[in-house]
Amino acid sequence: MLDKTDSNPTDFNAFPNAEGHFDRFGGRFVAETLIGPLQELAAAYDKARVDPAFIAAFDKDLKHYVGRPSPIYFAERLTRHVGGARILLKREDLNHTGAHKINNTIGQALLAARMGKPRIIAETGAGQHGVASATVAARLGLECVVYMGATDIERQKINVYRMKLLGAKVVPVTSGSKTLKDALNEAMRDWVTNISTTHYLLGSALGSHPYPMMVRDFHRVIGVEARRQILEAEQRLPDAIYACVGGGSNAIGIFHPFLEDSSVRLIGIEAGGQGKELGEHAARFSGGSPGVLHGAFSYLLQNDDGQISLTHSVSAGLDYAMIGPEHAWLHDQRRAEYTSAGDEEALEAARRLARTEGIIPALESSHAVAEAIRRAPQAKGEIHIISLSGRGDKDIDIYRENFVELDAQGPDYAH
Image (cartoon, rainbow, N blue to C red; front, side, top):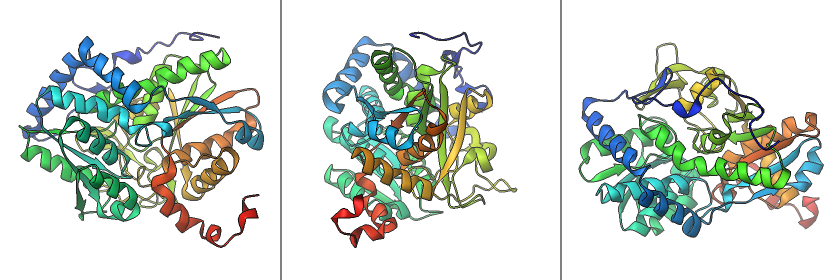
């Protein structure tokens, strides 16, 4: 079946509206000092997104700098090991810098240069967005400052070094939980202070309008390619697509071109962490409620007094208290399903993919792999795609902490 299986009454391309709302989610909930800069950014993006020269520059960089299209790969041994559905991987881990993040940073950096902003700032958790931001800044000759929680700096030393090698200044954030939420707070403070010279290169489909829309648009290439590739390879659409969801950039990127294909199940996997109590996970749909954080209205983890909860995940890129507003809307529309995988499940899924396919995934991506492994055995005859959002080089120290037995085992342990 080459086209949509049936009509869907929702016009997904009509969202967000002019004020940045996905129905009740999204919007601009910021101080007056940021309204002007956000309006300036939205106006600049509205012009750029229909400018053939901007589109051509973006497409050229995706092809010749990032290395797109990223392949879609049949995971034959994993499929045979799990049984049931045919499992394919959308290989965002093969992009330059090792993850999907580079798609968005190229788009926003080109926009910053177009707006005459010589300085970019960014927040990062797992470090991949920081690396991608430092990469495009170096290429375009822009100053780059990256805010990163002190806890994440300790967990992601390799990526911190990569950012510095690329010429970026990495600023440790020691407030709050010292993770992604706090890094985003500091980046926003910087932006308010340096509006005239600085573009805030936000790394996920979060924040105030136009960021959720803009980040989605720059990542749609993932789903556009996947749709074309699966039709070429299998002559039909997939039955299910899996993607990990922190803020939700890789997930919305692969989901969006399939939204009107109602036969395709879209499954987002949050961080189940170590337990179900607040502070033990980052599963916003399991333990969260609607509220405002960092300029947008969406589902977030908060206590009864409305205070933002601490989060936990073995993956530094998934432990954020809020989910992107478009995901909140898709959840309430029942167009996408959201579940979670715990730390141990993600770690075991990473080991399984490494042992069956010779691919070491990022810990974020491992959550999606875990859910696919869980569901595939009951889905014989189906086709399932996993968005493999990044590679696991950055997580080797965490893998070593959790797989201590590997340092002591002989070469026959792998079997």
